[in-house]
Length: 62
Picture (tube, rainbow, N blue to C red):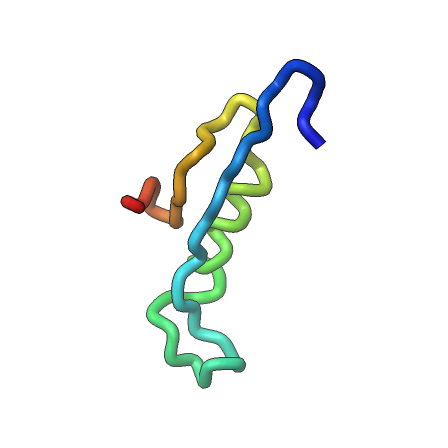
């Protein structure tokens, strides 16, 4: 629910193809590397960037 007087915000992360038991460890990155984007999104402040798709290295092109 947006705060009064503020427009809704959208933030999106791509965690990438991560080596897990589910895919037979065929992913290109470790589980720790795969969580970087998720943790970054979860800990971003209210004034953080919006309207962008990001991965662990930064903004991705649409």
